[in-house]
Structure formats: structure tokens, C-alpha cells
Image (tube, rainbow, N blue to C red; front, side, top):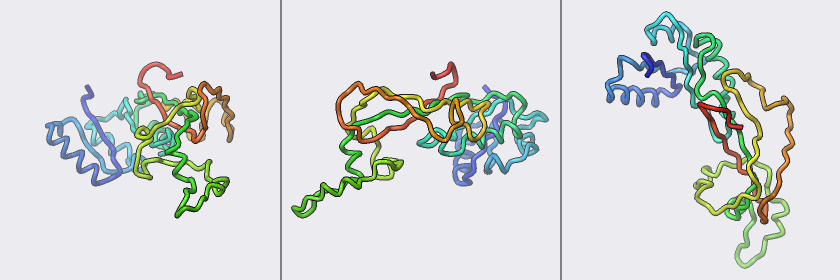
Length: 207
């Protein structure tokens, strides 16, 4: 294992919680927690916390939201690579892929649908139904995995990211504002939504 770990946590409450876990496990001599954004930390603070004249040779991060790059992972990792780590430091996880697949789910479709009320049919209002917004199902009190759904086509890779080298603005093989993907339906049904999810790896490439 690591001889010394310097952990960065922007939330002071979560940093305090982490320190309690460190004490609970008797690891105060190996783990130091700094309650700051990584962009606010100086190399000198890292060296002091790490009790070393050298900067760390491994960066471990979990900067991923519902979308792979939704929490500015590339911005923070580039800053950390350039300022807070030794040259050619290993980044864990090193790679990730954003996937998308077309799904049938009547429960998800009902989120923005107009429903009949008081014996009145409102179904024609659904020609105005919002079908293009990004929706996080947990904001509606459920997880996608908890409702019936069916994949209508195999998942496709929207882009792959190399966290050890890619810079902000990277969106795939060509840095275009728009990517067109071909999908081949393998199941019959109604396409209600596009489900997006991601994978990360510490080993071989995902694609």
C-alpha cells in the first residue's frame, strides 16, 4: 500500500467525517486530509502533508457524476497533474467511456406526459411533450433500475477519455460540437428515452 496518502475534500463536513474514519482505523500516521478544493491547494501544502520533499506519484480521483464529465473531471485532473503531482504520475482510474442506449420505459415517459384528469382526455397535449431534456431520475424520487425498461439497441460509445492525458474540451476522436452515432434496433418497441451511463477502468482499455 501507499506509504503516505494526502486526501483532498472540498466539503469541511465530509473532511471532518473522513478524519474520524482515519482515527477510528488508526491511520493518522499515514493519511492526511486537507479540506480544500484541489485547485486551491499549493504544492507546498501537499509536500508538508505528505511529509516528503517530493510530490505524489499517484493521483486517485472520483470526480464523476451522472455524466462522466459532468463534474469537470478533466479540468481538476489537469490542474492536479500539472501542479500537485510528480511528472508522469499515474492517474487512477486512467480511462473512462460514456455510453448511450435507446430504451423503452413507459414509466420514464410518464414523467413529462400529460395525464387524463377528472374524466377529461388530455392526450393530444403530448405532442408538446419534452423529449430532449436531460433528466436525472433520482430528482423524481426513483432510480432508473427500479422501473421496467427494455433496451431497443445495443449501447454505443459516445466518447472515450484518457484521464492521464486529455485536456478540457476533449469530446472524442474529433473535437466537434456534434457527434452522430448509428444505432441498429435489435428489439421492437417505442423509444422513450436515451439512457446514458459510464464505465471507468484501471486496467485494459474499455473499447
